[in-house]
Amino acid sequence: MTDVGPAIYELLTTNTLVRAYCDTRVYPQLRKQGDAGDTVVYELIFNDPQDTASGPSTLDVIQYQIKSISANRDRMQELRESIRYTLERLNATVAGVNVQSIRLIDQREDFDNESKEFYTTDDYSFRVIRSNYTDQSISPYQYRQRVETAGGEVEGFDLLKQELIS
Image 1 (cartoon, helix red, strand yellow):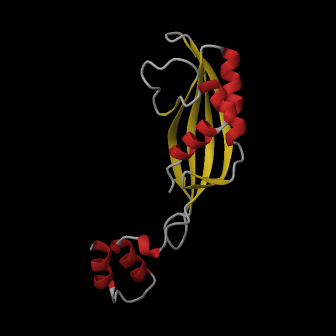
Image 2 (cartoon, rainbow, N blue to C red; image 1 turned 30 degrees about the vertical axis):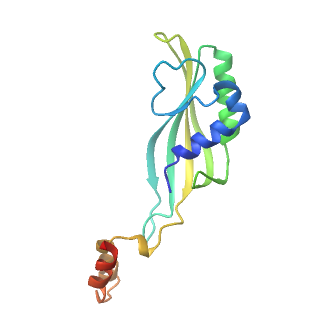
Image 3 (cartoon, one colour; image 1 turned 90 degrees about the vertical axis):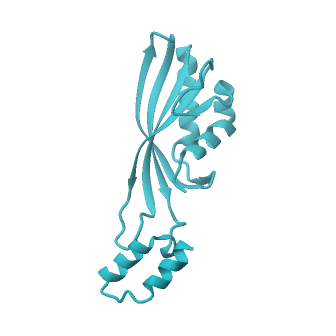
């Protein structure tokens, strides 16, 4: 699995440092409407699958943007540091995601005049190992393409195609 969102949610909502500020107010993409108080919002920026010569990527480098939001600048900074402490250089399997490492890439800070809240936007790079993909999980087209590219026969292709479709 390479959807890092559930792993971010689990890591942040189960960490006592982060929970001290925002409890479980940790949301993908958008803050829950009408929710006040310190909040975390995370959003996928991009996925950079690492190429392999023989099949699907076994390692993805995925960038997420994590926002720490608070009406108080000091609390916002403390929430940001709690998140960083929780995530940075983690190597674990969380929510079914095999995370090799997490690295802080960039930090920015701003103030929203409309909501009167301080927020930081921090970019994190997640290296995710995709070890659950094997030749059995490829499509019939990919299988045929690999056999032809390798100069082999397409013998058994129709049988494999029927097994994958049914």
